[in-house]
Amino acid sequence: MNKQLLLKHISSEQEMMPFYINEYVRSMQVSLKSYTTIYEYLKEFHRFFDWLYDSGIISDTNYKELSMSILEHLKKQDIESYILYLRERPKYNTSSQQAGLSQTTINRTISALSSLFNYLTRETENEEGEPYFYRNVMDKIKTVKSKQTLNARAASIKNKLFLGEDSLNFLEFIDHEYINEISPNAKSYFLKNKARDLAIIALILGTGIRLSECTNADVKHLNLKTLTIEVTRKGGKKDVVSIAPFTKIYIEKYLDLRKSTYLPDDKEQALFLSKHKGIAKRIDNRTVENLVGKYSKAFRIEVSPHKLRHTLATRLYSETKNQALIANQLGHTDLNTSAIYISIVDDENRKGLDQL
Image (cartoon, rainbow, N blue to C red; front, side, top):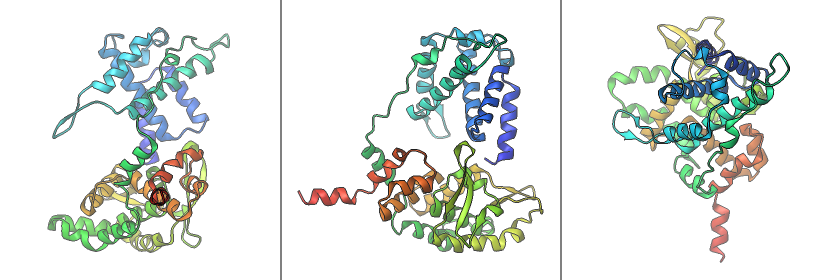
């Protein structure tokens, strides 16, 4: 989702929130939390307030008037009931009924609420310079660690990565074979956006940047002479990321067609564009997720842009065996975050077993 749309959604959510939530949003902005994080937190708070209403803890959906005393006096059992609701609630799609949220998603919910309660009980100041209240029910709620080992997680991810020659084969498939997989009616749309789609996928495969970092990039951020791109990492940190050489030809083809295909006005500086009602605008995250999904499904297995990021990291570690390099390329602040790629690249493990 691009910055303008994120700001619009954040503003819409804030209009429905009580003053102390909006104060927390301001605090997040001061600490340079990303717009994506702020929006996701606001959605979490909204969902929690909806549950408070549905469960009878509050009697009004006018959340602007929601008293802090409700949060102050929530019981541990209340939060546990909410977690069970998230885990067990039905989740419907067009073809089947599925269980509720995964534990990973629930952990993010707990993290968002814990951060809010920490702010209200420790960082706020009333007229006497004291926090708004002291009782923090979230201190009694813990996240549940994954029951998968690192090797198990690596094995489940590995099947969805385009390793070895598969990365280039994937791009070649889109370039030369995908058109044979689609209906005549879809061909004109595909051909119009083919250069852009290839450039997006090649850039993620050749840099490992996040989806939002890709869609938020401007033309001025790209330097094909030095093969680098400037991005804004989580927390608002600026970074310059190296681009793999194989990516260059796809980006050059797209840049040659960018203006003639999408007809952007001079003020539109977004690197990757789409057209909506005849107007060129920055491509959004959902569009990229959809195009990556449809091409990868036709190629072999449907994957997300994040799996393309995993692909780059795994290939890079396979070549360098340098965990610090992976962390730097992906923008990880903790080296341990990159440990999973060591498990995916298991050739050394196999060699060791062969010698037993």
